[in-house]
Amino acid sequence: MKTMGWCDLLIKNKDIAVMDIEDLDALCRATDDQLLALAHGVSGIGNLLACTASNSETGLSPEAVKNIGWMLESLGGLISNLSDTNSEAVHQISEMPKARKPKAA
Image (tube, rainbow, N blue to C red; front, side):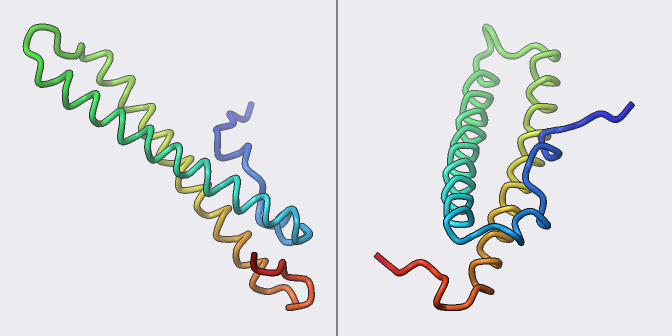
């Protein structure tokens, strides 16, 4: 039985290659937005960890640290794959004939 991760849920490069310009533009915007949200979330988790770890009264349990570590590893993989997806969409847009590219606002 195959185990699927977050990365398996993302669109594949072969599917990006056949998208029209509107879909590619939407994909670029969506991945940019998600990358920003994930980066801010990871930063917030880092801040929370640092503040909590420096509190000698409550601190963090080893189990909580382990769970946060596994979550951060998973988020790192997702961020990397979202970035790859965004790069492929940008590449596909750059390869389109100029007549099909969106006009700058």
